[in-house]
Each structure stands twice: as C-alpha cells, then as structure tokens.
Amino acid sequence: MIESHGKRGKNLMSDMKSTSGILEQALKFEKTKMKDSSHFVLCNRDKIRYIIAPSGKKRLSQNISTYSGKLGLLMKYLNCIPFWLLEKAGMGYFAKIELHSEIEKAFEQTGKSVWNMIVGTYDEKQKLVMQCFGNDTEDAVFIKIGNSATVKEMTAEMDFLNRSGKYRTFKVPQLVAILKADNTNPFNMQLTREFKGEKVEPVLTEDIVEIYKEISAIKFGKQPAEYEFSHGDFAPWNIKKTGNCYTVFDWEQCGYRMAGYDIMHYVTVIGVALNNLSFEDAYESGIKEIRRYIPKFEIDKETFLNEFRRLITQLA
Image 1 (tube, rainbow, N blue to C red):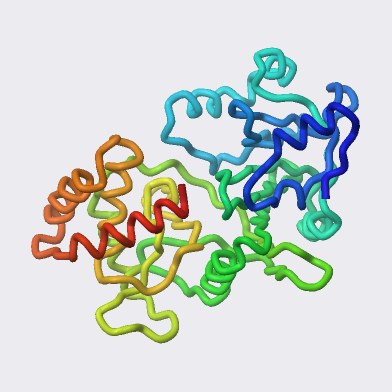
Image 2: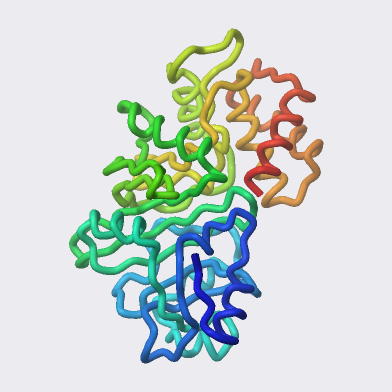
C-alpha cells in the first residue's frame, strides 16, 4: 500500500490512481527534490507513464517504440534532456520510491542494480513492466507485473512462454523465471531477457503474413474445430525486427480463435488505431490488403468484428 506523506503524498496518490490498483499496491513513494530522489516520474498530463532512475546510464530500453509522433520525438531525445528541464516543463517530478517487498525480491533475483518502470494502460487490466539494468555489457531483464485483476492474461502468457518451442519465422521472449501470486505475494511476475530490435512499419508485408501462418499452426492444448491458434493482439507494436529476424511479444491474449483472426486483426487495428478509420472501413480496406497475399482469404465479418471490438476495448 502507498503511504501518504502530507499534502505532497495525497497529491501523488491522486496522480497514481488506477482502476486495477496495481500502482498503489506495488509502489510507495514521496514526491521530493532532485537531490533526495531515487527516480524521476515522467507523466502524460496527470498520468504516470515512466519511472526512470536518474543514476542509470540507460533511461529506457531500446524496446520502447511508439507510433505517436510527439511521444516518439520525446523518446528519441530522452537521454539528452536533463530531468530538471522536464520537471520545469511540467512533464514530471522527482520522487523517492520503494518497491513492494515481493517485487524487490524479484528485482534482487535479476542481479541488476538499477530499475526503470513502464506503466501500462490505465484500466482494470493495468500492469507494470520493470526494466532492470546492470553494466552496459549486460542485457537487461524485464519483469512484467500483474495483480489479481490480470490473473487470466498473465497466466496465459506465462504458460505459453514456458512451453513455447522454436519457430522458423519469429522468436519469442526468453523466459528467465515465473513468480506466481500466493498468500504472501499478491503479484504474478514473469522475468524475461531483453530483446533488441527496431519497430515494425504499420503495413502488411509478406513477412508478417508468414509469421501469422506459423502462429496459426501452433498446437497448444486441445484445439476446437474450425479454430486456429491466435496471438490475440497481433499488431505492429507487439513485434520487433532485427535484420531479418522478428520477435513477437505480449502473448497475454493468446488462445484459439476463429480461423484468420490474427491477420484480420493486424490490418484492422492499424486502420482503427493509426489511420482513424471506423471498424467497418478498417475491415473492408484490411481484407483487400490480405487478399494481395492470400487471394482466397475469407472470414465472417460480423463474428470477427464482435470479437475485435471486445478485445480492443479490453486492450485500449
């Protein structure tokens, strides 16, 4: 639980309010001056987005990519901008932060000395991701943290990564450890090795189609008739590319769905999220794109859009 530290503490608690309550569970901290701080809290308006250790040589992992021009510009120059200037610009503040004891134990298990944190979408499924760094020659370790509100999603991803094999067209994050919630630990946590890569352009390509085909062929438990395996949130922002090698991550929504769901999701979510199209228009333009690569592609429009609306609302 977060402790209040007078007026500053109360204001901070208001800033941190989230539907899932994970910020309040995971962190205890006090807004303070730069010299007394452990981290800088970078905000978007009244919401915390990143928590960054000023002492760290790496402010955020290279794996953070954004399709927003404004935020992308900030991420590009973040390592060059003094924190005091960000504070002066009203983009955040310094704070002294303590982790929940169970999260602190997980951090110690990584053997790293510095951590930064990405704060997930503010909704009932909100999660946190810690980036744990050592010296410059070591890969970081990521700790994804979820509470009781995200048991289903965290369990799905942890089970998939734990049982996942090798794939021809893509890789998945390398699992280091799984720490499941119990009577003393309120969090599900998965530890993975850092993977590096560039962001994928938000267009359908032959490579993406081949990745979809391999995902859809995965056998993972009992397969319902006329269903295929699905990533569930198959989108450019959940894929990284290094040379000709791709890494697909964020498997929280994985499971069996109607045939063609993932590839249809890929083109539709680009239309809706990046091109401001309606669901209907994004679907229509998307299916034309798919048929350039899979000429006989068919999917029931109404069934797909119902599932798409349900999942995109959950992930928004």
